[in-house]
Structures are given as C-alpha cells and as structure tokens.
Image (cartoon, rainbow, N blue to C red):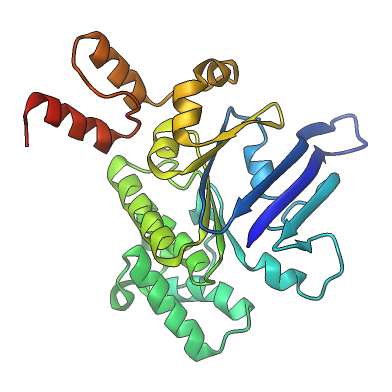
Length: 285
C-alpha cells in the first residue's frame, strides 16, 4: 500500500506572466507504516508536493497514484482512494467551521457515508484519542477553545475518517512548547496504534530528527535528498547548508560537548538520547 508520484511537475498560474514552477520532476513512493518528514526552505515546494498526495492539486505533468489508482484517471474508486489520505493544514483551526465540536469532527465521517451510530462512535474515539473529554467538549463551540485545543479538534476531524495516510503541514506552528509536546504525543500514539503513514511538513529539524524514520529534503522545487535522519543530518551537512537548512541543535550541542572533552557517543540526534547519554557519562541516574 503506497502513494506514488511519477515525474511530477507543477506550475502555478501556468501560461500567464506570473507562472512559477513549484515542482520539477518529483518522483517518490511513500509506503504505509512510514513516518516521513518533509523539510526545505520556504518556497522549496513542500506544501505544494503534499497537496498532490491526496489530489488537492493535479500535476501539470506526471502522475500521482494512491495504491496503484491513477488520480487523473476514470476509475470508479478514485474518491474512495482520496479519502484514504487525510490532511491537516498549517493552522488547522482555520479549517474549523461547525457550531459544535461534535459537528465539526462528524463532518468527515458523514461525508464518507457512515451511519449516525458509526459517526457518533468515530467522534467518541477521535476525541478520546486527541485527549478531549466527550462530555466536556462535544457540545461546546470550538471557537471558545484554546489554540491547542482547536488544533486537537482539527486533528480529531481527520482521525475520525480513519485515514491510511495522514499529512500534517506544520502541526505545531504557533503553539507553546507544552502544546507542541502534547500534539506530537497524540500523533505518535496514532502512528504506533494504527500503523498508518505519517507525512510531516516541518521547519523544525528537531521534530524531523526526533519523530521521522525517513526525511525528504526539498530544494528549488526538487527532491534534493531522501534518507534516514542519521544519513541526512550526520553525513550531508554541507548539502543541507547549501539548501539554507541546518542540522538539529541537539547535534550541534553534542559536537560542542565532545569538543569540550565530554566523551559522548557519536550519532546522537534527539533530545532524550542526548540527555540520557550525558547522564550516563556523568554517572547520574
């Protein structure tokens, strides 16, 4: 089970004096069960690329397949294939529109043709998953919630549709550290429980290093690199800097500590791993 892009080009405002090439000859396969971080400088084509993964944008050239179904074809199951891909946009609280939390989360399942009993069950499960108590929040207006809670409602609305692939475009943007941690705790819980594919667009190298098992680096409308966090951040630093990106601060910190004489192992990427290694070297428990 996979999403596949084959030689995809995309040009905004094609045929006008303002046309801009946003994607150029992009080919890739994302399999169910992967956690893929998409990183790149502003304007590199990240958001444009992920909007091709569920047919929100149609390529100017090339093809997009969801589980071998061509999204530009005429197969009767194209709509069902697209519904396997859920997308949470940047600042997803702007997607919220219903009068109550229940109605907002229920919109997707109803659109898939679920019965009211199934809809109610999906809303219950999705709210429980994102940590919103049903009795407390279901009948409340989502516009009376905090920013972090509104973000959870938006994610619950997508989770309730039970996607096989979940696209998250900067899900932690604008949130305080506590809210960010809570959002990613829920995302990882979903990923581990359902074995779905997660496609995370992020400007945070720390998020990419901590959560993803594969990283796509976009630069100038093309895929510049595709590899594991270890490969990308430890062995391709010069290429990252040429793409106006940097290595995670945790990696920089480890280098400074090693230069200062602290005997830390090489290859530490994430904050928990660095903290654990420092405690071990210092004899702390």
